[in-house]
Amino acid sequence: MLRELVCGVLFAGLSAGFVYAAPQPANDKGSATQTITGCLKKGVEAEGYYLISNGKKHWELYPESGVALAEHVGHTVTVTGSVAHRSAAQEQVSQPNEKKEIGNLQHADLNVTSVKHVSDTCEK
Image 1: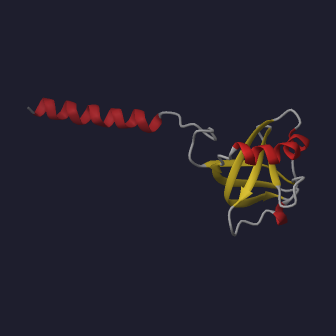
Image 2 (image 1 turned 135 degrees about the horizontal axis):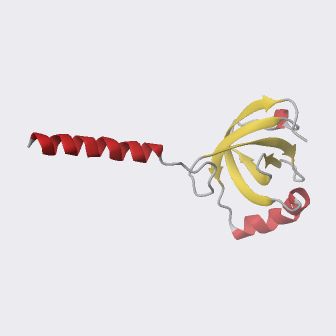
Image 3 (image 1 turned 90 degrees about the horizontal axis):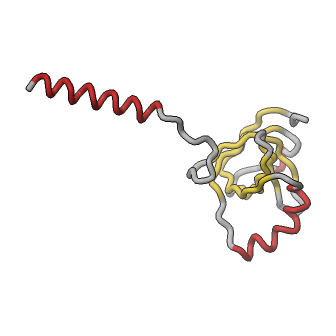
């Protein structure tokens, strides 16, 4: 009985170790929260902002109330939020402007809940 208890505890401990040691996806599009660092730029649209991530991806940013992006334009920032799921009609309206910003980069939309200043400049 003691042997079974010890084996059970040992197995549970090792199993938990493997779960916690498993690699977690970073900035995966399926993740609930995304944290992205890159260069913040003013978009073509009046209240539009976008970020070119260090991974060379274009993120169209939709700041939540209280998130001030204007003061960080041209700076390296880290934004946190969730992937925005926009309707086809919303995408159709914004796509002409996004195409001017994107070039050949991959694209995603992000609802921004916070912004953190990293540097006064962007990497070239």
